[in-house]
Amino acid sequence: MVASENDALPGGKVGGIGDVIRDIPPALGDQGHQVQVITPGYGLFSQLPGATLQGSVQVPFASKTETINLFRVPAKNTHENVRIWVIEHPLFSVGGIGSIYCNDPSDRPYATDATKFALFCSAVCQAIANDHFGTLDVLHLHDWHAAIVALLLAYEPQYHTLQNIRSVFTVHNLALQGIRPLEGDESSLQSWFPQLRYDHEPIHDPRVVHCVNLMRTGINLCDKVHTVSPTYAQEILLPSNMDQGYFGGEGLEKDLKLAADNGRLHGILNGCEYPSRRYTQVPLAELLVQSEKELLHWIAATVTVRSAHLIALHNLNRWLGSPSDKAFFVLTSVGRVTDQKVRILKQEMTNGQSALEHLLDILGDDGIFLMLGSGDSELETFLTKVAAGKPNFIFLNGYSASLADLFYESGDLFLMPSSFEPCGISQMLAMRAGQPCLVHGVGGLCDTVKDNENGFVFTGNSLSDQAGSMLECFKTSVELHDTRIEQWQQISTQAAKERFSWSDVAKKYVSSLYTG
Image 1 (cartoon, rainbow, N blue to C red):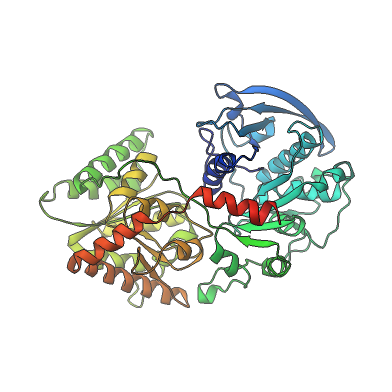
Image 2 (tube, one colour):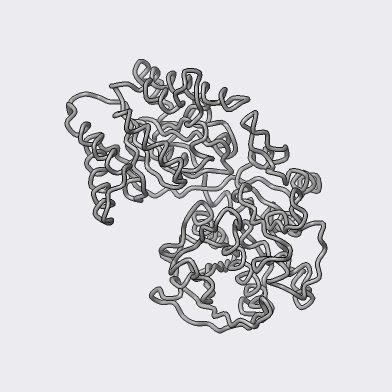
């Protein structure tokens, strides 16, 4: 498996790729398969305790020869059938030690990362050719960061003998495609591989033909294409339609439709870990105290106090003085603050207020909305401004794993109004703790949450319809919680009973992606 993230290593996760690369290799290992995982070291992983240098490869790249070092690194939880590799070069830590992704200016998107991962992929190919990993049956590439492996195997003559290895390409997030110029830029295909002769047709961006689209490259050059939920695999066969609030193939629907017609496209829902422990819902007072502790920790880490932190602390202090004997409805949310996650909440309703403000009005004085997350600065500002006017909204602008766990386990209802969702893990984590989820019926959310069975689902044929439907669904769910206690408990119990096991996922990987 070739990927940009691996949460089997400390600091190896930014998003969902890290979860998958942490969990699926041991699940495959439990079934007797030998799995090797390789990521860049980012100047960090090769320094972890137990990391050992295993050798090096010489890689022609950008008209020079680069030396790349290969390290074996023990995972946080080791497995006898799983080997973790990282490869190191100064370019891999260009954004800072341990920095997985870089933020490039809008006029040169992906420029730094694309060059970094181009070198990474070139080193992977050379390491395979040099037999550092032994005999391989399957080469599983994850998202655009790994797609140049497929490109080099297809067009670089010295790697043609590796084409007998079965290749699989997983789409984790189709919205991020790794588009760079074919030439004329230091971060371009010609600059990376000046002698490479390639077929332009399967790799160019369909909208900007003088650019390479690395997501499209992986889709078109690999034997199998995999998405992380069955519903998402169907959604991306249609073009996106922003007027209808529909996120589909993001310009790659023709390639994906061809892959589906050829039997190459498979949607397999991601799994979730189910530890053998009881989940205990802590009282709201404890949630507030722990939120305050984390918030003060964030504030102490900087010289100045961010407005989001100041407003959150102000709202928390108001709630910390609330009557302890009153039962409040607790709405929770954990996730990256991105357009994907916040677009519906930001939708302006007929009276000029956002859908989020309407939702908070429905919640009123009898409930509180605790949101944990960070991301897009403009969207963070939007959430901060709403919190300034709505004391029943606590926007905790950051991330804490321990606080996230409390939110998953201790809310009455978990909100996940994603405009699209290739799979989603937050809803699974809330469900396993017995917290029903209110979700938009798209992608993996549709495959995991069933309306009025284990949670609540809203839909809509436009952004305004989706926002209105979300508010109606929320109002109905709050009323159900308050008036039909037995039915609510049944929904909570069913949510906790659902199982999305990595063992089942591993079997589907083998039968649908690795064989057949």
